[in-house]
Length: 154
Image (cartoon, rainbow, N blue to C red; front, side, top):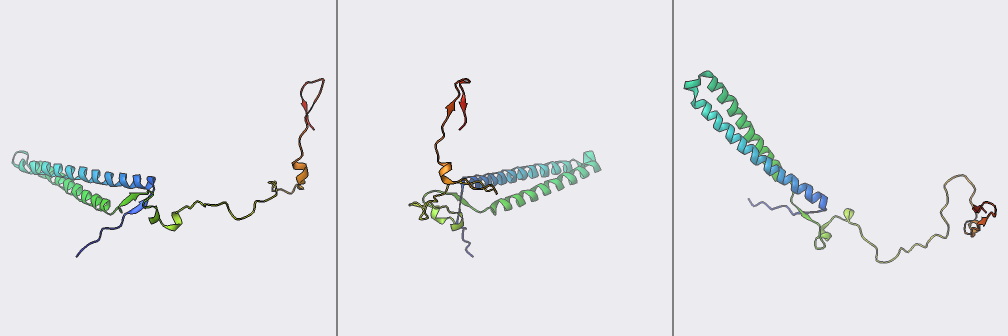
């Protein structure tokens, strides 16, 4: 039975780094759990070997530490299996941008939009009566008061 490797998914920088960190973290945690499990199993064997000197306490310690070692190895295989299920990704570039789904693709227009520009100025969306366009575009004259030296409104 031949298994096909899944096609790599094209993703953004953020998704690429998240996937990369999740993969590295999964492998690191799996490796640490394997080493910890082996260490616990070695301690369990040494406790079992010392049963004649320690007695029932050595048997109890060996069983508990051995069980913890087996649980650690089981957790390591679970973490590594989940890490292997992470889909492979590749960073987006000019060469593979065409592989993105259409819903995630932004296209810049090469020409201005065909709709005509509005000839109206922006207005406030309120029940206040509209100001005529000729009043909005009139120049403002500033008169100065001779006594105060400051500007006076129109």
